[in-house]
Length: 40
Image (cartoon, rainbow, N blue to C red; front, top):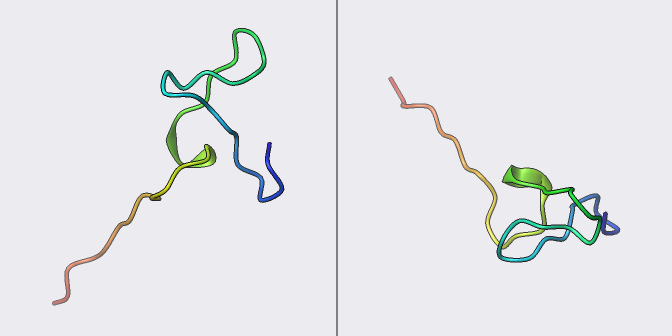
């Protein structure tokens, strides 16, 4: 994990630990998932 708690991966979602992959918002990436509720 990096200093912010995210997991660095390559383009195949592979980590530097054999047989360990990471996907989703726990990995190092430019954008994070954004969710919004419709306004009523």
